Image 1 (cartoon, rainbow, N blue to C red):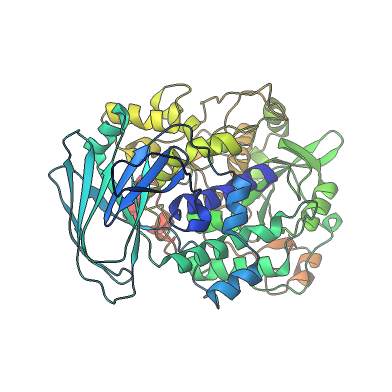
Image 2 (cartoon, rainbow, N blue to C red; image 1 turned 45 degrees about the vertical axis):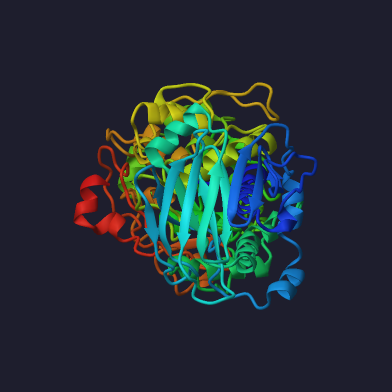
Length: 586
């Protein structure tokens, strides 16, 4: 699914930055110290406040008190404090290792419930083990978490934790052994139900605070270089970082090409042919890592009365001039793609698929969706198909559940102005509700005795229509939620290429799209393609400094309910397509 444009790309980086900020508030530079609050009693003092809570400390005891009227830190302020210049970051933290991408994501240890103590060891990355973590209620009925912390591995080490429900959170640092308490005040009815069913979730960061901040910055740096205003290309350093990330996390290689583009006039591009794209800008590699794809964006060629066009679901950005579901003349598209530093490969339909492709039906479908919003609401739903087997290293469904709920108010304020909520819309569709916030949707889910995994793994239905917005800039109509490859798959279906199979294209990832057995498997490559890349004997890559290779290309005959329950764990992506047990579900 394509997410490369300024609005959502900024939203993605903002999401990383705000998640990191929310998780790292024990650093004084990231906290707003609010004075003037009364203390709870003698000896207590306000440590810090953020958004709707204040934290009071006395010795090893902590009280988390939810309040109103505390202003949030703005996104720009968070970014300014969290991501200083790279040289400055290096000066503070020293040499950056090559394996820190996304390592700031904490480990889920379990949940503390009444009558169900939680215990954990220090493990390979922690300092302290916890002999028991218990939940009790004080005389006023407020939850109190008590941690019996064992002796640490050394005198100087410490552990940094995130404690959370779906509505509130607290970070806590253990630097000494003994009994630590955290008291939680002012839980509303929905949060009390969440605690009753799911407990207080406990997450531990893998490193100390300085190294965690370093990991955050190294991850954000994957995105920053390719987001410069009015600069469509990807800097060499950014591309290098993303190639290193893909190698380390997904074991992907993208060999350097000597010739970086092929004259499109020398190629026989026909209606229905697909262009597969990888832009080394942080987001495409993230999509590739999460889904097992080698691509981050897909488009399709379609001939109209005035010539050949490239049709796609895309959004205006620093490197792309047009919004939403659109068509661009082929030559103009290639020019823009080259300026954007696309690595682009042409995947022609097979002779059989060409014979099925109804150009008129494809045009008619395109005209019904042209100008529709990019499929924000279904952005994650084609990827998350299973309870645990889609989440990359470090990520846990409990953290995903918590973070989206906690970030929802901030994202609503700073991001969701002219685009819809990328999480609550999909949750509402699955619940059959309308207008619920993320926290409200979770509360409704829990009242129905559903689990988070049961909710989010419900297949995206192509028949669902998401709301339009006449007051947004730019406005957009109601319609289906189609990210890039979902749009391409829907157009093929409308054109008759996929036959009569019953599929939900919204469940497809880029890998699922190019693995469909509808392409020419070993096309006769034009001379220009062979000269540009002699070592690439299967594909004609028209653009890019790095060669795209596509394992599992053109291997899967379409079948009913295809790709609705598929794993995608890096780097063992092969089980998605070749494990017999998985095949029965996927």
